[in-house]
Length: 157
Image (cartoon, rainbow, N blue to C red; front, side):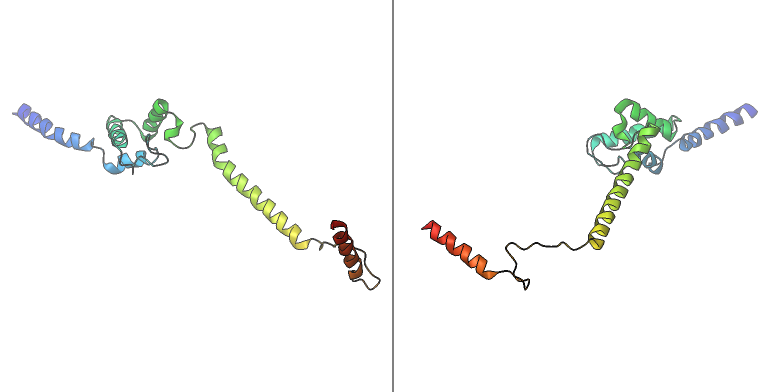
């Protein structure tokens, strides 16, 4: 009798164990958010509607159900398809460089713009030099220009 009770208990526990190992869509999407579509450009795997992405999500579900961690699943995809599937390099040095470089370039651009603006704001006004001779009163000598124009016109005839 005890043997029969143990068999019934074991058989009733099998469906419960199978339910515990099912992976929810949220768990799959948590990993898929970190990966990018192999077909489309710059579209996360969790929102991409293509067939390839659906297959990848099912593969993620299978790997998670087999006991692999999220990092192990991502590492597996990187190993098979390259670093383009994660968007950022896996190498810590390259990752740091790719994350810091845009900020450094932005900072340099702001500094150059600020320096240029300050130079423009505090700069001395340009002193213009007159094109022709200046009379004693400081005004341009209109007679000089008039005679030059008349000479040029006479030479053209």
